Amino acid sequence: MALHNSTGSISISIEATIATVEFGHPASNSFPSSLLKELTTTIETLGHNPEVGVVVLKSQGTATFCAGASFDELLAVTTEAEGKTFFSGFANLINAMRKCPKIIVGRVQGKTVGGGVGIAAACDYVLATHEASVKLSELSIGIGPFVIEPAVSRKIGKTALAELSLVAGEWKSAAWAKEKGLFANTFATIEKLDEAVSILTHQLASYNPEAVTEMKKVLWEGTEHWDNLLVERAAITGKLVLSEATKSALKRN
Image (tube, rainbow, N blue to C red; front, side):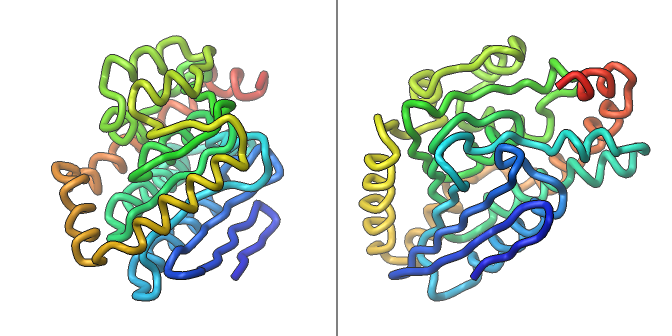
């Protein structure tokens, strides 16, 4: 099944209880709000599908995994309410991923920025290529990675978060991301990556589904307050995006 619109697409395939979800957008697989909403609904639906045992989340192409939020849509924000609504899209997606009773495996084939780092962090297990550098550029455009921070900090800790977010123009290597715990493993080529994803997902699909669901709950213990926290963070970011400094920075990028 494929969902297409002018602001990107999502395709879903299910084979041997393994659901593969692929998102894409012409602007380096960035996310406008409509695509965020579609992906959130897709994750929720697959989570309740008895024919699905594990979910693979990937993006189109061989270059960028995800460029984060749509700059065009950010520039179009004119009120705090609009800003909160837009960034709540990332909040809703991360919350859907953490509450999904199925294990979500992230397949990260290339660079990822901002909200894309948050999406990777919200996966339960991430495999990537050596080209999968990461960057949190939010401070450089006058906002901050506030919505995705809980997911990123849960994976890499506050010290690594500071390394990643305070030097907002600097890419951190895939090796760095693996060392800090964002990636479980990295591979030299996309072919090797896909082979590893296949082996892992078939292994996960062979487990007792009830045991996997209970394990997922254990992995996300202590995050129950995120339903409110991430929306509060969206409001903070939605206010900051209205500043002249942010508008100017977005136009330069």
